[in-house]
Image: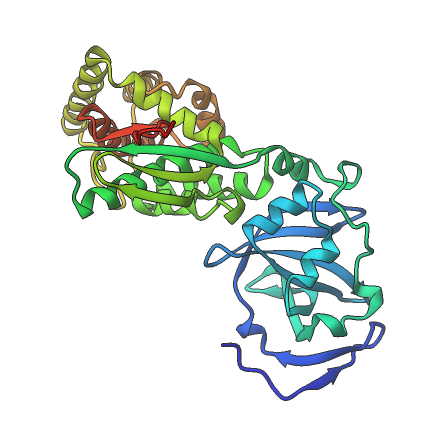
Length: 376
């Protein structure tokens, strides 16, 4: 619960008077910027990724000579989807909440860096919001006012997707399968959404940190942390009685990329070639004194000769093509990092990929297909 002071009025010179409860800035929930949805000489409405799979829209409402005032509108996955598809207005989203938070924001300097400083936070009942701060009754997210990022979000609609499960299962299995699937999904999401500046900046940041010794676990969790609730795989149903099914709601195009890769590995020739190259890469690392082959912890970068760089790049390209990730080959080079960093990333992907591939090879998993008998 957020601790607040007694009911009071907040008056900011040059801005409208708000009636509500003042909050400490530190009490605000943490949100990370994802994309601007409406922009006119500056952002007017932006999507922020929140914790606990509840995101928020930040709506600009007012300003004075030095500050801007924003409204934080928490939004569920379903309601955000309805707003993007023009079935709900921005006004509707505000009234879906009992209260919304307003705060003032201005530029400041912290540790020699320009930052945005929040102040004057106040929690306001929606029935006490000034009329001038409320969007009109036709405040739909029309294409004509949408940013390119908003248009991209409009086109990406999640749909139901099956992970068929069968045979003898243990609780560990029902944990491992979804966890490895979401890690691969996060990888595809991150590299497939580099057109969104916030995603691109975060991916580049994660890649740069390889030099500082970022762990593989942190890299995949970092990619997962990029995904707004509207695109996260959401469990629709979970049934298991051999056979069973995990029904997810997600971006089908990304899930199908994983399905295609796993399906290709069902070929014994392709699967055995992956294993041989993986083993030979381990030996190559060992012979050349390269660390971080199969460790999920951080690994130190090192100076590489031109011959070693060429060899590592070739191995990365072979893995990419064997796993049918060809569309990401140029993307990974564009993101940055050296040959060793890219190969480490691909090896980390392969280790997760191999686990799901083994489940499917054993008939315990079938990505993209329900194993439940369809009723007539």
